[in-house]
Image (tube, rainbow, N blue to C red; front, side, top):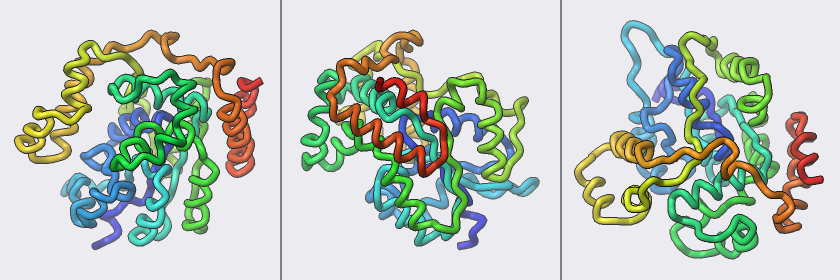
Length: 307
């Protein structure tokens, strides 16, 4: 299969660090091709990888007759976390460009925790969820706990980055700080940096970046929430009636948006560092110092929060 059908870049993560917003910004630009299924999980999830390379390529829009796409890529935050992902990518794409977006590991964990609460998967306090994480991660439940309770584990950035650096020594890497995309006054410059890195020109008139995707919130209806996230007759029937994963995803997202009551900015958004387990604070502080050395990002303001 010609290389033009395959990604030249991956934004591999991390989860809850704004990758959905970056996807929604980039897909507005006409010279980039991203999968119709926003996160294919092809390289990370066994059931998707077994579908084969042909299935993966079909997730991307076909080439246009009037104007060829300049670059093809994929944005999938599962790709940072699952160890087999870079190995699988390497067998098909030898030297892709790779982007990581990092978020303070404790605040990233809290955001994932709130997502699990919203979906009805979590009933422990944040503190107790962190304490129980290691035990939960060893449960034999078809990967449910690994996907949904991996609060601190997904913040082990050093081992995730090293896997890619070791396997792709000749690839170009870009390391982005979450704050620089969404909090500080560097958002425009940081987005432009991403565009230059992957090989397109950003256009502020085309890419509307005023909307932040995937906001936190609470479900208006627990019944509707359970229909789309828990095993049910509705989900089984919907899977049979709606044939493509792309359309199933669109329907799920539409129901989710209708059912979402967005939190105010100050609501459920701040971590109480004083009530976290000591081991969580210590591990996160060590991780920040380690990844700061590898990436050369200035993460001093993250460490200040632990004091």
